[in-house]
Image 1 (spheres, rainbow, N blue to C red):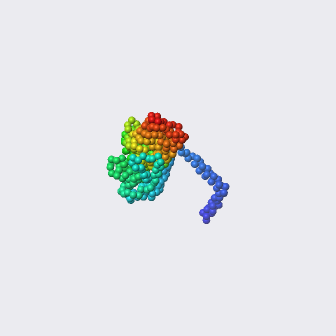
Image 2 (image 1 turned 90 degrees about the vertical axis):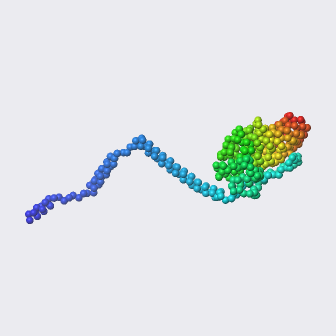
Image 3 (image 1 turned 30 degrees about the horizontal axis):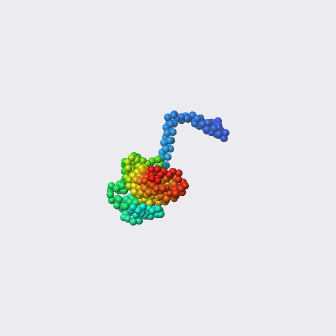
Length: 393
């Protein structure tokens, strides 16, 4: 009973625990927040030195470059996939038999041998374009394209001789590094230029830079002008006095769609020999034909009258003879300069010259011409230069 009383007495003396009010809780929370803030403020700040910053910048640059390269690679891959598929669809497989070559001009009729054109003869009609539909086919599509595409100027028998300019040009073409990318038209153009190179002893030209190389023919050497026109077709066979020797090949007529100028002047050697090929009449876009100082002879082909765009005809210093070709040259309405001086022409001054109303310069000096000058010469109203020296007028 005494122990029970003592326990009761102690219980009454011990005060009950105090309940924490709302304000006390808020104060404790504020204290905790301040403590956390102090801890955060005491965290050390990371400071990078200059080398570390430079390395980080370099890393970012390298990552950016890598991403760019990945994008470029992806673009190239997509482009190759798309355009490669289109090329395959257009070209088709390479193993089937070759298709027909592009259309080529047909050879216009020529007069009988040794029959000079009469003053009343009319110009020969210009070359027409017809596809080559006859002849054998060849296992090699390049050979087939060249032989059939050149049939208007070159007999197939010309390829039987491996030493002929035509065979040498074909052999060279077949060895072109980029041959698989050439269209049939481009194959024929490069073959034609190669025939010209071999026909005129191209290895002995004074300058033959890039000729018969794998470079595009638009980069081959010509003198002072661009080799190709705006359509990237060979237009200017301008070689000047470049020591060309040999003959003008008939195959030049295959460049009828593009050739605008032929300028090949002779030097100390005899230069070009033989005659002008009748296929020259295919070149209906030709504006300049300058073969001054060579050794060309025979008669001028009547097919010259097909050159409706010709402005300059210079054959000075060759070996042409016979009567002046009045009916031939007078049929070229656009002609402004005609130089037939220093040849072997005989006879009189042709009346047909008076029909050349656009002619500004006429040179026939140093021939064997004679007789009175016709009164019709007064109709040449555009004439500014008339050189008749060293004749017998």
